Length: 108
Length: 116
Image 1 (cartoon, rainbow over the protein chains, first blue to last red):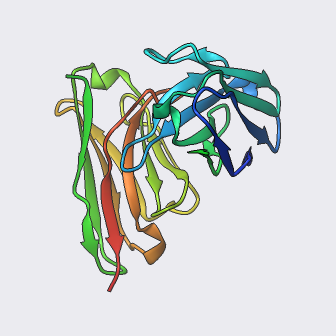
Image 2: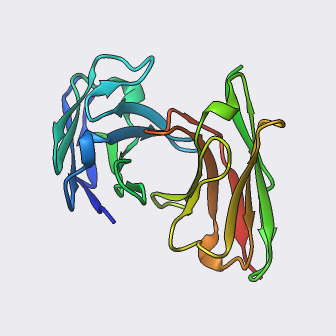
Image 3: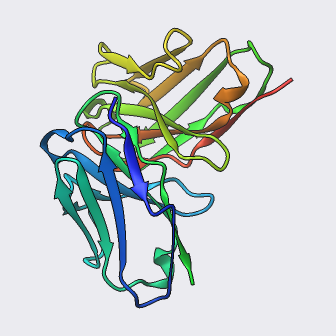
């Protein structure tokens, strides 16, 4: 099974700043089948990025996904108050589909 | 409205059984692979099971294999998860999710608590 390790565990930033979240896979993710999700307290996850770099429908362009192979990054260019949440990466190129442990983005 | 709505969660004793349902609306349910994903309190996401469009192909996480069964009724636009031999570590919010690739739609989740 592919293990995904996200870093940092917690990221403290202010609105307007740039956030960089990392997701590292224990082995290469097939065809860049890597997704990012945002989850707010008491809510279901929401798909942000699929295929490592494609934004899901309705996702603002301040969210950008990049990477390939074993190293992937989610960048939020200018943080809005509503962006403070937990972010998970997921690989869906091999079974079982696995998630990273999450990065909590909190207001500094 | 395009949505997934889970139901069937609750409190069950260790060793007991529960069946979760996920009602789909607003899209062609029979065209989509469906999944169950769970999240223990304060923890991350764990993929549980997947079923293909016609229900013939299913796959499970090792932690639930032999205890859980995923199924679907395309005529009723409903996904199911039959959970048997429940253990305390099955306690979680259970989400249904749609997608052959990434999960582009999720339900709001239903809480399952396994405790005596």
